[in-house]
Length: 302
Image (cartoon, rainbow, N blue to C red; front, top):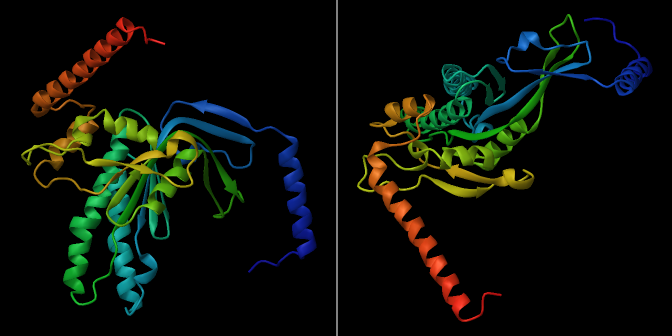
């Protein structure tokens, strides 16, 4: 262990660092390439700016209770069983940066169809927790099954990035300044196991995609899968999000996921439903026009 400096000297060094940082304005360098953590500056006052980064934050529900009444080795196996597949899923969907924070993992996505890939990664992680992880835990501990699963959040924003810490040591890490990571984490905190919550910008993408918005063709009638959800501790219109409680269909999941990630949004099996919606909207317009005409005839147009 290295010799420790006196507290007064540590505070003096810290004070000098604060003063030097506040005297200068950091450079913000725009970049349109993929995220590469090796590109991030550490000592220089320079931040890289990435536009419209999608973040998926997956948190293991009830992790503090997993240790109750179990051997340490069993608890460790649950963590490894859950977190490693979540990281693999983020990677397979093209996350360019992935970080593990205890019982949670998050991934950052940029590039073509990045928001759609992020959404699909989040749905896949929650599906894994519900349809794979929980059945395995139930089989392992049938009388005292751990109550867990993944709580998933997704958000999007511009991000500034820089490494902060002590250079030429292991004591530094990338820092991501911006709403995406923060809001995605808040979404996951508000969710419960097997739920996914997204902020409004992500919700807008979901509403415009028929593969995401409606249930699959396995049922008699396709219904909306997502519900309105106010996201707490998220400011402005970003808080007008959505929540998903269902998982990928075992029959249609592969095909729907591939369609979404390749940029498709229009489902051929919904042509009749789309025509009905269009007719309904047209009828509403006609009704509104007739109402206005009656008001004008009666001199009450205002």
